[in-house]
Image (cartoon, rainbow, N blue to C red):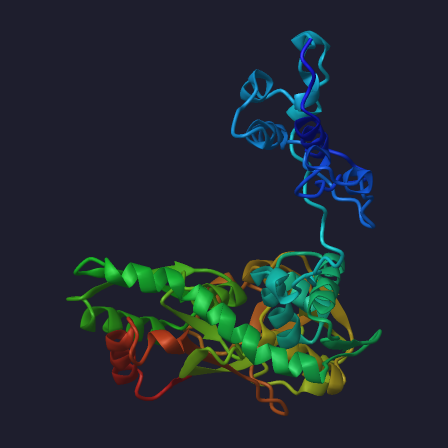
Length: 421
C-alpha cells in the first residue's frame, strides 16, 4: 500500500470544518523540505471560526486543488475528503441541512400604532350631532339610536384622538377646547364625503334632471303655489318632485345629498354647510275646546294655566316646538300631556275632550284645519304672539358654482320676499 504524502494529508485536515479551532497551514517548506515540527503543529485561534454547513462543495473543491490541481473522486461527487474509502450509506452528511437563518438584529425598531387613521366617519357624525344638540338623548333620537351606545362611541373617539371633546355632567354638556377645534374639521370632512355622490352623478346626468325637494307636513297653500311657480320656471331643464317627511329627516337628506332642496320649519339644525332662504312666516294660535270658550274671539295665556299643554314625542317634534314648550313653561303653563300619536287628528281628540290645549296655525286656509273636530277651535292669544317660520334650504357647495347654481338663482327670483299669514 503506497504511503500517503504527508503534505497533502495535512492540507486536507486543515480544510475540514471545525467549530472549535482552525488549522493553519504549515510553513512553505514543511517536513518535506526539512522544516521543524513546530511549523507543522496546529495553532489554535483565539476566536473560533464557523464554517457554514452548506460548504461541502467548497471544501471538496479546495481539497482537489490542494494536490497539484488533481481532484479526488470524493471531491468530484461532493463528498468530504474524510469519507474516502467509506460506503456512501455509512457517511454522515451534515452538509445536506438547510442553511441557518440569520440572527435577528439586536435592536428591533418599533412602530407606534396610528390613532387618527382609525377614526371612522360614523364617529365624526356622532360627534357633530352631539356638538349641535349638546344633549346626548336628543342627539341619539336624531341618529335613531340609544343614548348609551352613542356615549360609548364618543368615548371611543376621545380615546382614539387622545383628547376629551365634551365636558359632561348630569345636567350639562359642553364642548372642550379640543371639541371646538374638531367641530369645523369634522363638518368639512363630512361635507366632502357627502358630496361624492352628487359630484359623480353630475358628470353623467341626463339633459333633463329630476330634482327631489323635501316638503314637511302642513305647508300653507300659498307656499305650494310658489313651489309650483318654481317648477314651471325650471321645467325645461329640471323635473321637480316633492318628497314628504319629518322636518329633521328632510334636513339630514339635504346634508347627505339625497335631496336637492327642502322646505323646513325653522330653526333647522344650524349646520353651516347649509344655506337658508326664509320663504314664509305664519301666525300661531291656541287650539282649545270650543265648548269651554264659546263665543270668544281671542284668549289670554293666563286663561290656559289650568289646562295641560299637548306635547308630541321629542323625536317627532321640531326644534321650534321644543323651544315653544320651554317658553310656555316659563310663562306659567306647567301641566303637560305627552301623546304617542304625532298626527293633528290625535291632538284634536285630546283637545276636544276638554283636557288640554295645543298651539297651531291660525290661518283658516291652513291644511291643519282639516283635522279639527267639531268641539275644537283656534283663537289668537292676546299676550303671546308666536310665529312659525319656514325656510328653503340647500347645500352651499351645490349652490354658487355647483350643480344647483341655476336652481338657486330661480329660487331667489321666485321667493324675493317671504310670505306672511
